[in-house]
Length: 102
Image 1: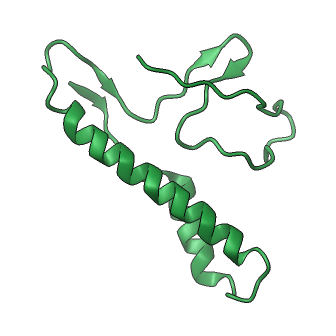
Image 2: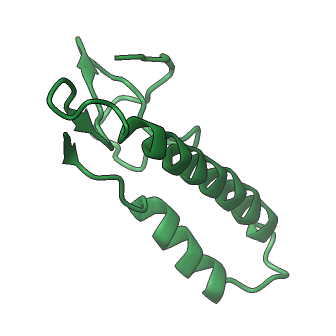
């Protein structure tokens, strides 16, 4: 049973909006385009996986999309994770990446 459905990531939506307003000649425009391509590919991959996951017996599995788990003091990366600098100076930068299969 899906407890938390898959939604468009807020970062993807905001990046698309930024792309509309950013001049194509801006030096960061190619970086934004590359980042958006990766984010859309990731979202479409998750969408494809979600189609298979929903075929699982609903009485046996609980589906939680967009879940980020904490391991000690570290947050395990989710689809919103990025290699860009942490915009929250009060939080420690994340340097470790884990692959997690539940």
